[in-house]
Length: 640
Image 1 (cartoon, helix red, strand yellow):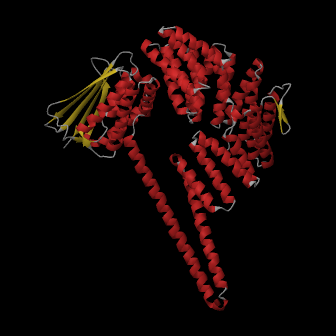
Image 2 (cartoon, helix red, strand yellow):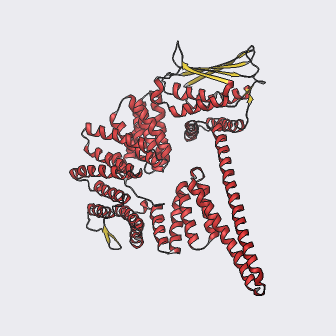
Image 3 (cartoon, helix red, strand yellow):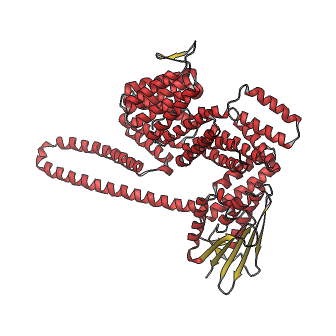
């Protein structure tokens, strides 16, 4: 793994307008908060304080954002809700939790688009773009940047347009779209010159260096990095490291790191090593807050290529310390792979094998065919090396028995046959192992698919539990936590069974509805009715059949409503056809109105899974209620 260092997070900080004298502002806002009882004013103050806290105290930022969100819900204030969700997203993004941040940004977008507030929408498009890039969702990120840039051009916001263009170019770089990045960076450089923004000019030239390097245009890449250095302003008392003088050590370290990667790609290992070492020294002495895994992993790679084994090992271990502290599991797995290669070059096969196994374990969910092949090849090399030692000992014994030269030919033929037989047996065993692993993986994936629940529900339930304890509602928090753990245990236990009783299905469904009702602060009511001729203790059906439709009714029908929602579940039995009928109705916003914020992929997947589980035994009919709002789902399950 070669790490690039982009300045897009710094650019996001500029857009957000990092506060000056933050402590004084917070104290002033806290004082105003104590003096007012007006809910609108308190909501606004909570949001402002949450924003100021997010770069320094994530817990307090989260707490104040949740307070603002609670008030905005009571007041039905869409703008306040949007700001609260945006502050939650900023906090998660600052902590490095991209997927959580994306979820909160999506919620903020939902509220801002109903006002509508184009300024806030542009900020959300820009901010969520960096998080989407981190999880590899580039197309959606690029689409958002286009929207943000269109807004900035329409409102003649040149400063923000420059920021959007830079982040867009950084996203294209992450997606390895080199030619598109170069074109966009050159457009942004014209605007940066016009606005005399040396900071973004330097970052744009660094981006050009990265992308020219990807295109193997190394001379242009070096020239771009030189231009990036030239943009950095000089100060009266600059910092100096190994002949480099700058008063912007954090930016200079990033540029050196990226240029070092360029030299590494050209196999100019000495130049790469010098750049990486200077970057590390600058970061250590003048910008320790910028220190992270890239500074150590990259110099570890260069040192390894220069056969500075002990130094390389030290750098890899230091880089792993940062990765393990932030639980970057995929990056940890690749760092373990580098250590495996290093130990292999040191002829320490056991350590090489051990670290590659650790890498395999960490990246199991992302395991590719190439990784499987590498692991198998290393296993073969290890077994072959072991066999060669045994073969060498056999040859020594044969040489000591020269008087039996008449048997040497026969022994050699026998040895060749043994080698061929050993290789065939070993290859067959490895192939069987791979087939067994793939079969087991498919079985696990199927088991997980049956047991899956909407991750948004689990995440929001955990947030609700956190809210109880933050607000000192210990009894409610303990009760809610008990219900949630009981539901998870039921789902895990029942998903292992091909069938269970209708009584168990309804108990699990009631527990899920009670949790959602409490999480939504009584925004939801429900009723479950079973006909007299339905024997819930004897009838058996596949587990968790009703839950996906109830979940869709809550998330996509009732949650977006301002009024209180209701779900009706009616279960009846047809003695003639021996069929169980279930009707699930809600008074939500209906199918067409929910298209703007419904996750169509998730719903289609849930419905498809349910259809496959029922097979020919059941039918599913989903449509809007004919005489009132909401959706009606009819399920028919044959029991004969």
